[in-house]
Length: 374
Image (cartoon, rainbow, N blue to C red; front, side, top):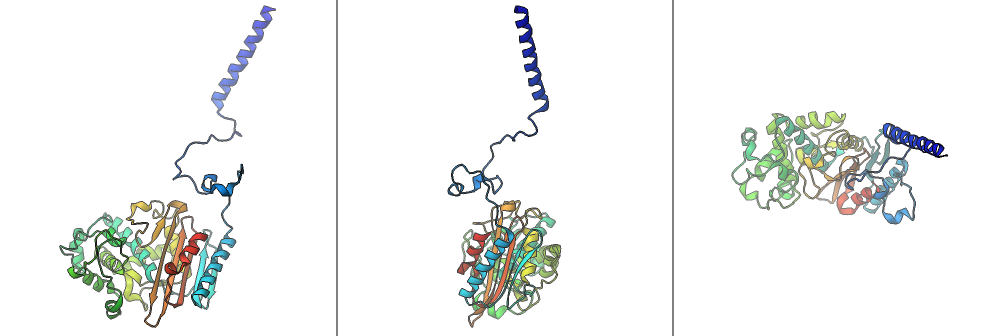
């Protein structure tokens, strides 16, 4: 009897050791759930349950709430756009919602979505991206000062002086340079507008000592900053602003209908580009998709002040990035034109333009309505 008990214990022990050894060699079974690892909340993927507000989850629900279907998203944005236009008396305009797969939802109100129109301050994103590329080509950074490139600036007849040579390109890009007033506005603007290349004249005037009335590091949105950046691009490349940025920003995005020699061309680097709603959507998708460039993958590699970066506002990064900017022109008779874009890092883009009243997207809530949808 004792012998049988000993034999049975030996068999059971051997079986146990064999099972343990087999588990060590083979790991977890192939159908076992993965082990959850702790992760930084700032880097976790959007759309997980932790990103859904707790009141929406209910009790023990494990459902992950999907994003809105593209058609629902586009229809919601169109409804907001039409309501906004009706409220502000806008009868002419175009809007598109571009999706990552290239499909596009088009809304034409007395204007085709392929019609080129002034995009006003949406031009600043083109200038910012253009200079970002130029700086990399030249081995320079955004913290290069005007004094650092004084010889090149002098070659284009805009020579930095002792009172402005410490201004960095970063400060110009995010409107903290101290250049004030904005010489593109009011009488100064109206008397200077006319010829392509106005940015040189504006920059030359802006850098005069009497026009340094702002406070460095204080945010004051001003076209003047981007007039100076247009000159910097010319100084560093030896090309005209338009050629430099067509080569580096417009052409790589496959845009063929953008112009900077039209009615608004004199505003060049700060507000001179013209293109259609469709074209700007494709441009934004190319440059602000998470996998196309590192503009949204690594946004903090560029200067930023309260989320204003190099010609655009950006929140988040990667596929979760939200990038936007607005612009408008106002005429003396109360009419005007405007434009707005909002791009997600995953490739969804809204692009709109309009004519009629002097209406800004940011002053009238259009930007908030679209952002809430995105």
